[in-house]
Picture 1 (cartoon, rainbow, N blue to C red):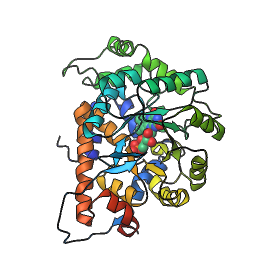
Picture 2 (picture 1 turned 180 degrees about the vertical axis):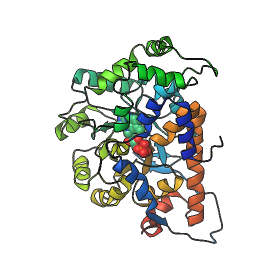
Picture 3 (picture 1 turned 90 degrees about the vertical axis):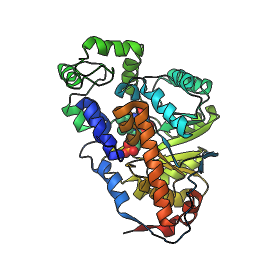
Length: 381
Ligand code: FNR
């Protein structure tokens, strides 16, 4: 199939993955209202067209977390990338490095921080789920220091995991428990994961091989997900601030009040996020939440945004309304699942080109220019 945009990568991923893995990536919680709203609310914004600007290729570089980056987006944390294609985390990190942008590894990953550090010397960020076992958390932090992680993102919107109804219907409860339904689903998609040729059938042994390959990493990750600390509070963020000397970011803020509290405990930035519509269904979209949060934290505090970003114009809208950078979730994960590293390269390149064209047609010469004039360029219907 011809791949023109991120939605095409999504369709390609759907073809390749077993249904229950595709639905796990693609789905949101409960009625999926917030999941849809994240995208719909981008469509409610209008871009101002300005003509006869003596075209020059726009400068897409931008600064966030104290460093200049060549593009205004990075790869955010998505769990279990190594399940959707072999060595998925490494492939995503290598693609990010090739584009000069950071990759953020999820706590729930098949590859370890050390694996990633040996796969690439690109900028590595790490997303931490604070677990009830603080000794294990300390191990994560030491491993992050060892791997030269620049920025640590503590995710705060998952005290309780919401119900993702597609997963329930698919019987997707435990990643390690091979039910007859999981087995049947794997067999329907023989090209999945093991790069077996057409007609080859993965066997349960192949799946076991996969878990061996990660030396039980999959099982560990699935067990860890049940151990996220439900009682996490602001005092724990303060303790983390004392402990972690690198950049510290809170991921999962959706209100101006929480944003100013985050600023008060001394973190370096926040990610305006509703977990891609996978947690509080009914919550507002991130793009709708962004302007008030920017007003509350002032112009100099690092604000990232994620949720529903599938187009370069979405990224232009987010930066124009106050984000310093955007984190991709599903957009690059579809690419990875569809075609490994080449699929992530394609997702990054597609968005880069879309941003460049969009800015040129708006008569905006750079991301810096967009940040400065954003409120005049992005119009609410
Ligand atoms: C996520 N997300 C996520 N966030 C996080 O902090 N740690 C994690 O392990 C995961 N895992 C994860 C798995 C999958 C399959 C998805 C789709 C998402 C949330 C992610 O970082 C981000 O907030 C959303 O994906 C952003 O929404 P879009 O861009 O995917 O619509």
